Length: 209
Image: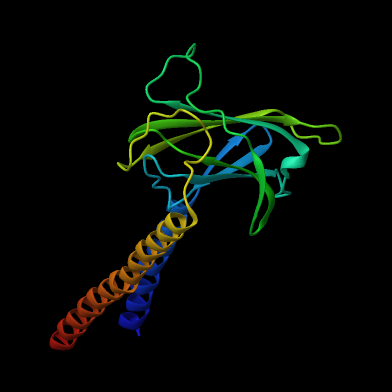
């Protein structure tokens, strides 16, 4: 009985670490005043230089009540890193509402980073008439991967023909599918290793008896 309790605990612990690790890597949460800001950028927090990436920021009050963009006078600025305080932002994209479960009408923007490297995204906000949350500021570090370099510092996405956009979406979907295909192998390998360890310990326990 002791062996099976131990083995069940081992497998459960391994699965918990895998699931918690996957969830933590999906979003980044910062708290400022009484507002929690959940940040995400596509694709999978790995934007590429020269390619439009969608970023969104879910705002919630203490207790989990969401703050839609219509209630927030929000502003997003992007700096390359490192930068001096007096330097003008590299990007000042317009924010638009985006609904992503379970958050309604979160602030979002399309970002096109001119080159690979380190960047800082800073979202600030204050309540509009009728809203009661306190002003907030939240900053996020983003690493941009090498891609198609561009000298433009505009926040607008790079113009693309419908066919090239379709190819880009198909490529991103293919890459995401490939990444997901490896997940079962990783989990399966971990569980197999746990099973082998348990089998060896069972044999050792049987020999001692």
